Amino acid sequence: MSEMRVLIAGGGVAALEAALALRALAGDRVSVELLAPGTQFPHRPSSVVSPFSGEDSPQVSWDRVQVTLHRGSLESVDPDARDVLTTDGGRLRYDRLLVSTGALAAEAVPGATTFRGPISAGIVDAAIHGARERIIFAVPAEAAWGLPIYELALLAAHERKDGPGLMVVTPEPRPLNVFGRTASDAVARLLDRAGVEFVGETAADSVLGDALITRDGHMIRAGAVIALPRLEPRPLPGLPDGFLEIDEHARVRGVPDVFAAGDVTAEPIKQGGLATQQADAAAERIAFEAGAEIEPRPYRPVLRGLLLTGEAPLYMRTDLEGHGALARPLRYEPPRTSRAPLWWPDQKIVGRYLAGYLAAAR
Image (cartoon, rainbow, N blue to C red; front, side, top):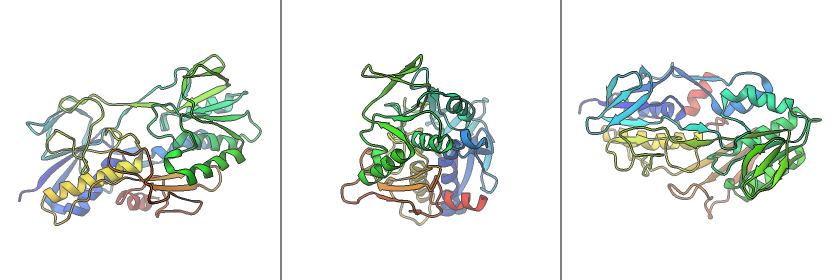
């Protein structure tokens, strides 16, 4: 069998995990090519610390991965011809394509300071340290992953012990409810000890003057409001509109030989660890189709969250029920919550192959 040409479009954690997995599983049965804007990317989960430390998020480099790099971004896909058009007008062929181009972070609460990760460190720092009245940290109804807002609130409480009051406003009934009752109760205790007020079952709508307006018409006074964005799909002509629906092996439904992983997919929770699990499912299936003697395992999401608190972090883990049903924990396995690491290496982004790669780069 001739070498299979695998093209990975995107330069984030899902792309890196897939490349590492393909190298480990398929070896010389595949050639791996990467279409990405650069040779490194910021470690996004660490960006919550930047407004307080003043340091940029660490960069993750591709320098130790055996891939052929094409600098650029994905413009469109021609599934019939099995090629893609890049934003600079080039064309690249593929036998299998993995799309991991992410999503667009759009303002969800007009008038609020939107935390978009590393690029937002400066404006979030200014909002937190410039406020003289209550600071509200808001999880919008459309947010795909709410944990960073709790980290910002807890880190702000640790940084500004004599500062203004702090509040988390979220549609969730309990803090980080997706991890289950045990974890939620632990986070609630952390918020209470830090003096952060929790307002649940409340969706932020907009900021008007010195107040947050909720969707049910209430006003909450605030000197600053920091909100997470909503994620919007990137237009990719040749592929289905919107976020991409994938099957249990991360294949894009209705499009032969195209896979997807990460924020570009239609999964409701968009988080780095889940993205690496999708990438692993795709890589195993591609390696199998390239002739590797493996049994490709389906995507079965396990949600891991490492909550930075300003003191000892909190580790949370729960298996999630069913592919495409990420909103509730399994009934038969209680979530696990601990101040001690629940996985190793104890990093914020957990990937079967990525974890070791990141640990070696420390």
